[in-house]
Length: 513
Image (cartoon, rainbow, N blue to C red):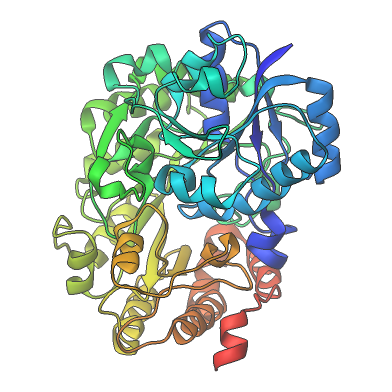
């Protein structure tokens, strides 16, 4: 008998359109892995069902669930992008509705950024959900493992959840905190890698983004994502990452209220890297929002990784802010550790816009100098930009794109600004009666019916059109393609051109421009 089954939903086709077939990543389900291992360390019997990796239909998933026969179903709804906690609700709700239609007699719970941000709304909207976790859920799950029967009578004593009682009234139990740094190694003791599905060898159903694999198919599999820290100390208006730290019962959560970072010890987390390396995984994403921020943690970890990268065969990438990467000696240490890409949140070519969305915490830096320093250390850059931030005009968007052309980084990613549930932009939108997306798919950056924000001078349709046009222009740019061929070879150029053949359809653009 399995106590808890953690389910990763499959929303790929409605989220990524034609990119889902080959070009979008399939990431290991970080929080299913962490929660499963945490519950297992407390004596719980757990399983993971990854509907995305196995590309399961609702019926196939139902059959597997019946065979596993868990006491509790827990949908874990996060994903590889910041918006995924909302957009992956597409597949999650379709499956939980299907399970209820099939009259499955197992309680259904949800963990994820959307339900953390809007717990009351999701329970009002989605009748197939019996209860939700108000934050990461670790300690609430530990309490649930002590309950003999999961019903309304017993769960009303479980802290950190909201539920619908027998009269359909939504009740919030008392809040509960998240795992503190000093307890991370104990209460979040690693990843349940052994519970993931595979075809021929571990983690071969997971694939990296194309750029991470140097635009080569052979390096995309097997693939894994791993965290060495949780959360972020900043309060960027467009971000909702910190919503998992929620420790209250606010019906509309704002991530900036819960900004903090927690760390595993380098000596502990290196054991998880060792497990992956022993399984033959060399292509690894370090998912931390701010990996290169606290030298107390990342320097010892890089030194430990360097000892495992003697053949320079690790292909890892990590996030960093543009204003936290300055010292060449640190970059050299990062490169020796096997981190061959850094993802930089440049966001905008306009200094004023950068400062505004980051609440003045973004130090003014010479972006070109920083990118050159990184590349001089032998590390490639994935540059992240956002079109349509507050204050953006067509001129500032063109300014941002011109900067990106000048930088000519080998990775390039741009989104149209979205008011994601859990962000300050979403709360501001509610308070100011801004038209916000109503369907989960409308929060997707890549979906057909995506609905990004407008600005004072630009409609959402115009911003979206500019984003897609700039994407095409950047990846077909001769200067970029020549740099790609010199660095990664002709096959990489061919793969990029094949990616460009997949055209995203946009409802807003079709109807308004």
